[in-house]
Image 1 (cartoon, helix red, strand yellow):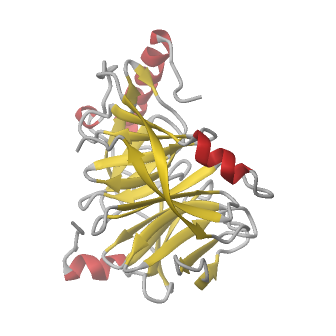
Image 2 (cartoon, rainbow, N blue to C red; image 1 turned 90 degrees about the horizontal axis):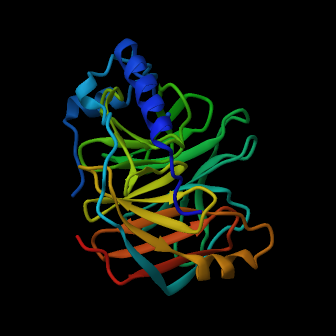
Image 3 (cartoon, rainbow, N blue to C red; image 1 turned 120 degrees about the vertical axis):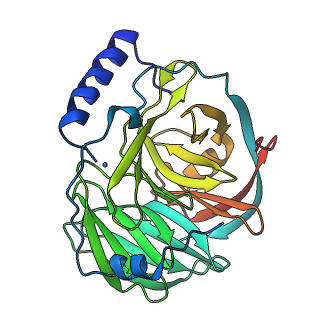
Length: 302
């Protein structure tokens, strides 16, 4: 199922509830270089910001009528080995390595991985009651969400030492960084925009396909100014315009997923990584033994 149509009455009801809620409190769940003061702030032992009310103008309240999205397939360029026990939740590429967040209670972790061999070079297990989710990199700090624990963990990129944490309301699913904001998904139609230094929520954006809301937005990755996102439990990746919230492209990975599904215990597609220097794009899934380097056919319009 590629999208999730919502009747107009439901849209009105959802928006009304959101408007009422937003007036009382905020609900939550090139490389940007914060100033040295901001870097010191991110390294504090614990950060638990007080949610601030969101002005109505920061919420996209009305239904969008988006232009029709383009449709694409993928070409497999390369296959890389992957730990088939990794329940992949978040994936990114930086400085020649994959960094990966894995989930499940009593088995969640954050990892540094050698792409060519799939070897896990560094691994830090999360406490047994935490379920790891999305992952983003800001100024040499890795930020990892948790699913229902309302906690995000901050690590030094070089050694995976935990240096901070912050809290949010609601579920954490996917996370990426656009050079200015952390952008977070929570399984709904909303994308949340967070300040990378204070972690306070600044605004939200609804995601639309034509005139329909799209839900179950999961893993996020910035690619050429757009967000690529997994839709949970589908074989589709979407491209989202950050100004309008409109889906500009649907990317079908049916053939790739069929190949991956032949692997024992393989579950759904999840995990997108991009290297802007080379233009390489990778995808994987939960308990997949392969990371696939892909080309999108035809290429996405920038």
